[in-house]
Every structure is written in C-alpha cells, then in structure tokens.
Length: 170
Image (tube, rainbow, N blue to C red; front, side, top):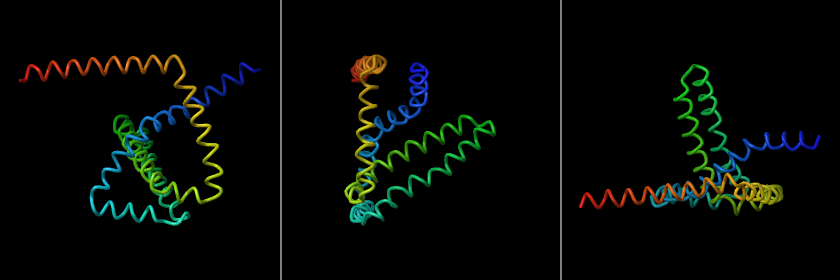
C-alpha cells in the first residue's frame, strides 16, 4: 500500500514539478528581461502606477493578465485538435514564456501590496516553503546533477567553438 501511495504521489507531482522547474528557470531571467522595458518612459510610468496600487488593485493587476492567457491555451488545444501540432506547440510555448515573463514582473511590482492582504500573505509563506522544498529535492537528484554537468560541458564546448570561430575571422 505504501509503495502504491508513493508511486501515485510521484506520478501526480511530476507535472507540477515540471511547471515549477520551468518557472524557476524562467522566472528571474524573464522578469529581468521584462524589467528592461522600464527604460522606456511610458513603460516606466506604467510600472510606477502598478507599484502604487492598493492591495486589491494589485491583485487584479497581477491576476487578470495571467488569466487572459487561458483563451490562448484553448486556441492551442483547438489547433492540436485540427492537426496543427507545430502551430499549437509554438502558441503554447509563446504563451508560457510571455505569461511567465509578465507574471514574474508583475509579481515583483505588486508583491509588497499583495503581502498586505492577510489571506495572501498567509498562503504565500507555506506555498513558497513547499516550492523551495520540492525544488531542493529535485536539485539534489542524480538526474539533475547529471544534467547540470552536461550543461556545463556543453557551455564550455560552445565557448571553445566561439573562440576558435572568432580567431579565424580576425
């Protein structure tokens, strides 16, 4: 019975962990990329307004754009059903990347206001601890360490190729 419970838990957690890993990988870099838009005066002014929102409006500012991506995902499902797999996959990937970038930046801007909502602050703490615990377990796994090592090796190889290519061009 314990084996079945553990196996079922792992199967159910696998998709959640994949999403968490993607968001963990993409959250900071995508938020930084989105933050560069703040160099534009109009965008900086808009971000300034978002930062000063009261808690309930910050919740809307954070939640509504994320929810607007749901129809895009339904469109991707429709494309899949019509046999347009590549187009559907590209749409899902674009929605996931843009949605993560937008959510990450909006959370950076609205987090102080959101934390003034007692229920949000109460839920966010346990969520963050659970997420960090799960990611720590994944990072401690042999598969994760092997992939990180492979990534380092590929990066080093790409660097050598780049240096050799630049040396030939001179």
